[in-house]
Image 1 (cartoon, helix red, strand yellow):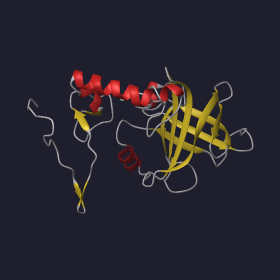
Image 2 (spheres, helix red, strand yellow; image 1 turned 120 degrees about the horizontal axis):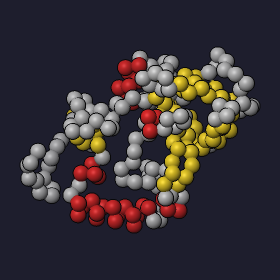
Image 3 (spheres, one colour; image 1 turned 45 degrees about the vertical axis):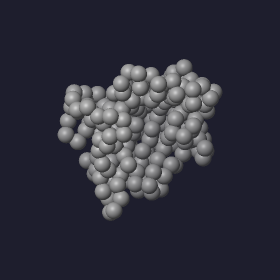
Image 4 (cartoon, helix red, strand yellow; image 1 turned 30 degrees about the horizontal axis):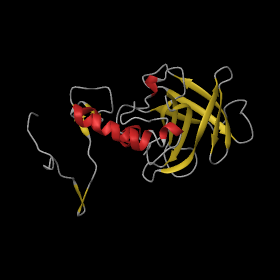
Length: 224
């Protein structure tokens, strides 16, 4: 803190893994607790928000010209950027920001593994100048990051029914949201043949993601 550096000066070195170095880094602000918790204390934060004002302005102008205007404003995704999350810094998809809704990041509460119920279920409900709608992303086995399906979703709160319209199929589901505990849970069951009348032994129980790395959360839950 307070040290002066010049452009091009090394500020850190990657952690070695079997003769290789990791190219990833994370910035921790120890005066914040509104994001993913860091290893000791504080929260991991977006480095874009900590740039010098003039550098941040230049970066935002370049991002607007090369990403937002040609792609996101036309409703097109590019690389890892999607119109539903169009900014350099986007709010984390914690369920606490979407009370009384099934939106959020959800972890399967039973043992993870390839096949069967998706281990990770991300339900985005976005509204910004470039996108208004709902996105579902289901992934299996965090270690491989295998996507089960991607698409959009709708919900009927009067009947507790939902629909996943995906790249694999259309799934008709029944949900039960419980926000009475410290962490919300989401019970779902879906099929391709129509909405289930009630839950069966095939129902899946998810728990909202905690404010920590998903891997750590899954390990603490004993599911991975």
